Image: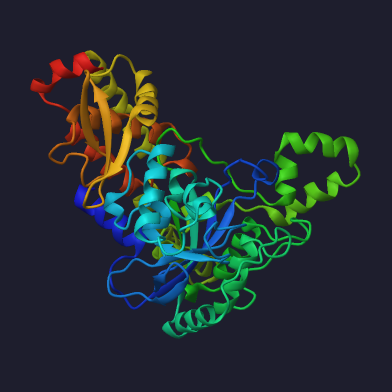
Amino acid sequence: MSRSLAIALVLCSWLCCTGRARGDVGIVLNESLDTSVARITGSGHSAVYLSRICPASPVKLRLCGPHEQGSVMSNYTTLGEDKPFEWNIVPLSVFVYGVPDPQSRPLFTSWKIKNALEENYREKVLSDYCTGHSCQTSGKAEWREMVSASSERTLYILIVSTTIEQDRALIEKFNDAPNVNHFNGATRNCADFTRNLIDTYFPHAAHRDVMNDFGMTSPKAVARSFARYAHARPETQYYVLHFAQLPGTIKRSTECRDGTEQLYRSKKLLVPMAFFAWHELPVAVGSYMLTGRFNPEHEFESHATIRQGELGHEIEVAKDDDDSGDAQLSDLEAAMRQERVRVVGSEKEWDSYREQFDSIVAQAVDDHILASRDSLGRTAKDLGENGRPYLDERGKLWLEVQRDGKTTHVGLSPENLLALGSDRAVAYKLMLAHVAETLKSPARQRETMPEFIEAWNLMQQARPDESDKPSLAMGR
């Protein structure tokens, strides 16, 4: 697959950035950060994607114009802004990557980089809503969670189609209603917000799971119920987007869980539960095994495109139709595998890239570009700790680094990694580290195949020529 095709798939398949008649609404399922209360609950976070609705401001909605990418609406315990808003809305690419244009997305991330993207968004968009000292400086102000979410966690978006009338009705409802925070972890949490918004489009399409979440609403339960609703209605043109956590130095996120799943899978909860409430434990485990199981990665792999979901439905129909022959069923199954591989990749493809990459790294060591394969991990750590990220006058992300006693700069996105002024040696090492992390990651934490192919091609283009090698050897 060529680089241009990979980029086209990234832009059009993920962000739906081309003008079209179809509108979408989707449940955003964010993995758990394993911090604070999440260390106990493992619940993650829930938000809503809207392809045809865009921000008129962070707290008002409007229909998107041509070629706009849609947006994400979310609420938190406290957004930390000057007024206690219940929700904010941001463009999809800002939510996922922290930048308006997905081609400006970071290829590498750290807390310094995420903070630079947050501050840029605050200055350019939130300036009228975030004037207080706490809003501007506190790491607990949760408007920050809506900027470059993929820097700190993997996320999935479960999507169905909408009509323009439904989108207009949602805009009217939320623009007319008070945007005042009444967050409550038990009855008005982020998953409740998502459930209520989705029910504006499709009543009872998303709902809580009283048994598995002990009376509360969890992000995973809402996503699971919405997926089941979509499975039963092929006309919704259901599909799932997947955005892996960006390679870098930020701790990897963990799979989100509902209540009984956390009891079943978490040793720190299972052991005390078995000791103090052993008679309730079989009920909780049984409830999870029978009704609570849901794997968003499998959901993505089965519905990575609209066509893949349609083929899955056609296969089920063909199996139930006595007039359908084996050849027809075989053709449908082959088409479905091909559609899946186009986005997800096959294990054979991933293994082939791993084998090629081993040779590339070995050559880089022989050429004294790398001290050893292990030094790839140190490259990412050094860039994260010692580099100074900044955005230029055009809003493009760069990293200032000290190399060979001199200050140098490297572009951090696909569009400026190889731009004039970007240090080719640092760019090559950065892409080697990027590809290395992707190839060693489990499926849920690695890029889609179009994304990876673009990164692979960037890595190959960044490889220095003979004239660069002496300086590379000095600076390794």
